[in-house]
Amino acid sequence: MSVFKAAAIQMRTGMDPVANAQTFEAMVREAAGQGATYIQSPEMTGALVRDRARLRAILKDESEDVIAAIAGRLAEELGVTIHVGSTAIARPDGKVANRGFLFGPDGALVTTYDKIHMFDVDLDNGESWRESNTYEPGVCTIVADFPFAKLGMSVCYDLRFPQLFRAQAMAGAEVLTVPAAFTRQTGEAHWHVLLRARAIENGTWIVAAAQGGKHEDGRETYGHSMIIDPWGGIVAELEHDEPGLLLAEIDTDAVAAARRKIPNLKNAREFSVRGVGIPVAARRDAS
Image 1: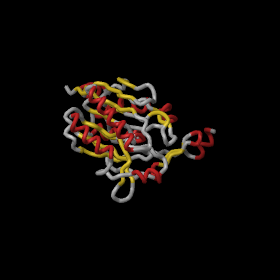
Image 2 (image 1 turned 45 degrees about the vertical axis):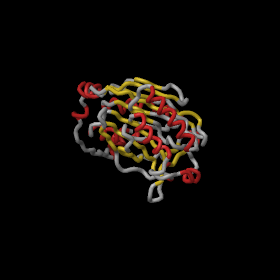
Image 3 (image 1 turned 135 degrees about the vertical axis):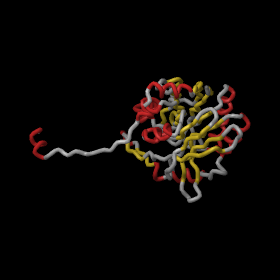
Image 4 (image 1 turned 60 degrees about the vertical axis):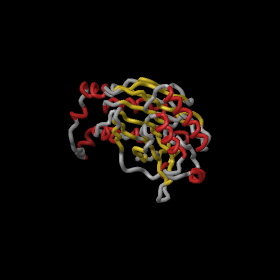
């Protein structure tokens, strides 16, 4: 049996990376003080900046990023696994990555993950986003094998692409991670149901640390960080959009139990799709 305490840090990240790093450090220390050994922060922990020129002015590469540096130091000092949900990173090719980081309890960087799916949408009331104008999408999903669990990595909008999580589950993931900055509009509509669906259909735990509230750059995010069990039950939730800390125990034996009850991963079959046209005469008769 592998039981560990997970923490999801809910933030209201501003535009100053140094101030955000101080908030991040204080919350990581609080989570570790309450017994968490896996600590996850939300998408864009380092800075939420909608203006592209201003974002590029504060960008650092991976070796100089303040959040990555603090996360590695804290992981070693506190002896915990720290998952920086993501932060904006300057790539060597001049592009920008929306990159998550996993640091082991020795402080070493285990792996990184670049968000694959770009949030390019036009919502109601004129709300519009074009992440692909700023960020270069990743091309590889990650399953990290820790002694306490196998973790699948994602970021925010990835949640709407079930094939990503199915691939991680088929690769052995027991905990799916969804650090996010869901908009208030989409969060109110879909956050709970999508997270529960990904847990149910894959028989996995979900840990989802979120951004919440009205941010310095003007955007509004939904909050409601959650930890969900493999049967789709909400084990813990911050039922608001204020900064805060969410903790719960995760038992990976529950994954095997859920998959024994509903063995859909084993029962999955390959199939093809065949389109069938309706003859013009039949369509006329039906009308």
